[in-house]
Image 1 (cartoon, rainbow, N blue to C red):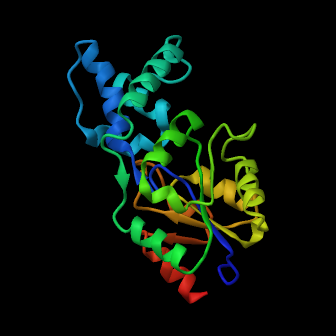
Image 2: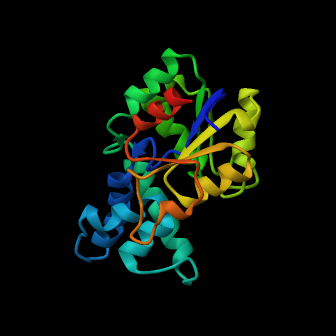
Length: 221
C-alpha cells in the first residue's frame, strides 16, 4: 500500500497543527462574555477536531439541533477569526516530517473540513505551509469529508492518481474518506482523539503515534 506513494495528503487540525488553544479560547470567550466561569483547555481539547460543534458543545452543552445554535456558531466563528493564529502551532515533529518530504521531492498537501475563511489566512501566516502543493478546504468542493470528493480534488490538482496518494488524519471521517477515494490511509493518534474514539476500528492501513512514524512507514515500503 505504501510502496508507490507519489504524494502525501494531511488533515489539518489535530494532524499537522494543534489549534485547540485558539479554538478553545474562542468558545471560552463566549462563556466569559456571558458571566460564566472560564473552562480549562483540557475540557476543549478532546473535541477540537469537531470545530464549532465540539467547542459550543463543551462551552454550553448544546447541539446543532438547539434553536440558538446557529447564532452561537457565528459568534464562535467571529471570535475564532480574531484569535486563530495566536496560540496555534505545528505538533512536535511535524516541521521535520514536512522538511523530509520536501527533501525527497514528495509532493504534499492539505485536505481539511475547515472552511476556507479560516484555512486560507491560517496557512498563509504559518511558514510550515509554504511548501504545500495544494490546500483543499471543507467548502472547496460541494462535499466535505467523509465524502471522498475533497481528496479527489487534491489528487486532481496534483495530477496524481488517488491510488498513489497517502492520506493522514486523526478522525474516523478522514479514514472513511481516504478509503472511499482509494488512497492509502494512516490514522494519527497524537491528535484530538475523543474519549470514545477507537482508531483500531476505523480500518486505516496503518496507525502512527507521532509524526515521524510516517517516515518509518514510507522507508519500509
